[in-house]
Image (cartoon, rainbow, N blue to C red; front, side, top):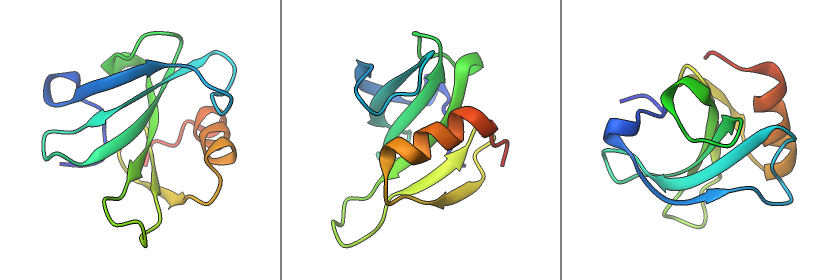
Length: 96
């Protein structure tokens, strides 16, 4: 499974906005069908398959770096700053 958001296979534990959320977007935190934790970015205020804009993996091992993925599930880069990475995902709409 790629790093896409598919609502039928994901569990959302939190959704909303915070200081890192790009304008006009919302976030959700949860797990995919394999139990991998993600921070998902959506256009608008609802987490749906159609509004998915990208994701950031949340590694279980604190020595690993989070990885960003475009809307198509492809690699978009290593994350060191969440706010900057989310803004890039929102702006570039990486299809990956």
